[in-house]
Amino acid sequence: MAWPAIDTPDDLKRLRRFQRWNLAPWVSGTGGRVLLPEVGEVADPDCADTLLLWNQAETIGAPRDRLERGLAVDPLMDISASDTLNRWVATQLGEGTRAARHWPRSVSDLRGFIGNRPVLIVGSGPQTAEARQRAIRDQPVPVILGSALADTDFVDILPPGLVVCADGAGQFGATPAAQQLIGMMAGQLRRGAHLVVPEELGPLARHALGEIAPDRIHSVPMGGGSDALWRNGQSRPLGNVLTTLGLPVAATIVVQRRNPTIDTIGISLMAAGSEGSTHWAHRAASTLLRRKATDLLVQEPGSVLPVDGYLDRHYSALDAMIGELNADAVSVTASAEPIYSSSSDSKQTPLYLNAVRRLLASFVETLDWLEATRHGMAVMIGLSIAVLAVITGLQGTKFAAVAIALTALLLSLATAVFLRLRMRRWQHIFERRRRLIEARGLELMSERLAAVEDRLDALDDHGPRSTDPQ
Image (cartoon, rainbow, N blue to C red):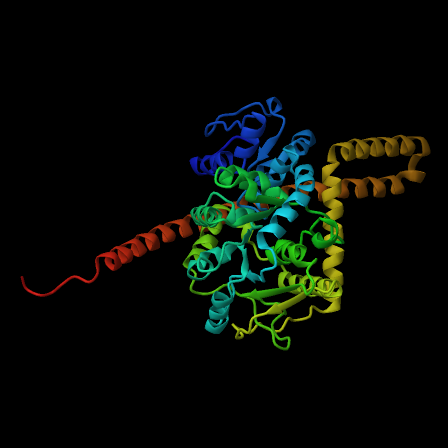
């Protein structure tokens, strides 16, 4: 059930989108119900086993039992509501156990499907015409990484292969661009391709595409940071489709060959600035990718917030994974591609600033911990003040100064926790309103641009008007 009370029709619209899409596999698999009260209607949260905490600002200071039963799904805050719901649905349906049980069969099916044909991982980055022509000539089995599906002029000429998707919000969401990508996945499945997703997307993938090819949708078991899919049947979650699924799945398929090799196109295997590197970027010509980003900024901006140091961590993990594959005699090669753009040199933060930030972070974390236990802490402070008052009365003025100092300290601590509680609430309220305004502005702009594009498409379909007199 959604909680607290829904404020506006737009909020209800967002929640209904989650209900019809992300929660649909859970409803069909368990017979459960999703209760969405009408705007302004107050429902009893105790009648639901799980609460959809759709407004993060209004949950500040909520009773702990409700927070423990809740899922943080505010699409306007710093979370991916889609990922939260997808993980919850997968957990409720036991997808982790199912994926582990079915993965050996999936490996056998994928190896039988590909045979000894060369494997080419296809990304959405820049490509040379020479590399594309070579791939079209050699006809390798493509491992298509998510958004590269949008390059239909290329992937539709290659043989049916593997479609690998890991972006819950952008590729398996309810946005128009995501639904278009799902339609492209359906087209690849009809051609005979296989779809590979992480276990948290397994229920949604089967719900959306299971009628087309139920035996060609594979869930990959996810493990920890030391796992390797080609070694122990569990992949490590690294926040990037290439390192989480693309390379591990391709390596699992080819690792038993005599000379296992994985070729890539449209992918940067090294960070910009390294010798022979190409800077990672999507191909600028992809209108669908731009629409995908705009849709997410309108409907779920929390899922596309920038992450500090993301590229550095990605290339570090990628370099380590390629080293592990080389140790297992698996070669990873890249088609020759030009440098797409240069990246700015990263600036080192002064050590003293890092120390100050760590100190402030520790202080805020302590306040957050105290805030979570504020009810018990209030009782303890009250008892402590009472004990100090009794001791002061018994000891007289001799102990009064110490008692007053300790009482002031306890009251200061309580005040700090209270202010932290209020500040978090105000911060979430203002940030939420700001993002609502930005989302509405982007939505209006998108509608206008879509209308212009439709007019241009119509003109292209009918051709230029004739100016010759009749």
